[in-house]
Length: 246
Image (cartoon, rainbow, N blue to C red; front, side, top):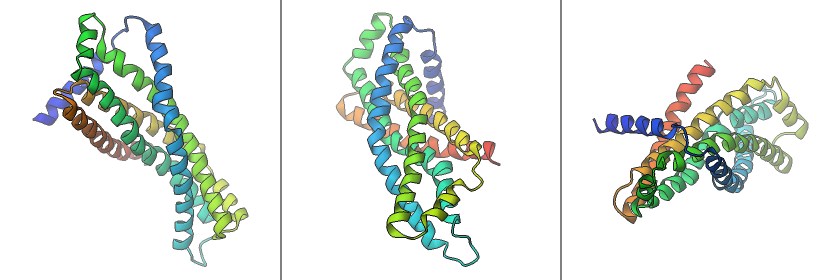
């Protein structure tokens, strides 16, 4: 029953969030701030993980597909498909759930326990909308750009690993990357990314907004935000894959 309680309160919070803002210009400025805090500050970790994971995927694929009947360009093809379809949209979103989700939950949770949210509500401000909506919008805007960058860097990391280790000739690797490329794969990945961004920002905002207690409870809310965001990302990954690819 507690699960249904949280689900109901979560959707009630979403309804409050999407109410007409008191002053749209303030929200626009806040969205720009959140684009920097939630997106651009995550570019470094996304880049590092993407390059090395692309290299690892290439090397592992090469050593596990050593068969005379399998064309060597299949290594590049498998690397491209793995990165575009699953690694960049899903794994990067899980990483962002840890980095961005914990930040959102702890920031809003701290404002709750220090009574800053109460002060906003006393002044007649839609505190939920003011604090959470810009984060949701910013995440849904910037996360697809992070994922596209991850796709490029992941494939670049695979190309770099192929050239350095010699597990596959670079010409064959590039041919595999270009082989039967379907732009819908990128579109599918970006759809997943937008949904995952909504989950990360809204779920983390929910746990932060309803934090009660002190500093210890803020930490608990941050942990629960990361855990539940990750679980919902995995669940919706399965649902969206079934709807869009099958």
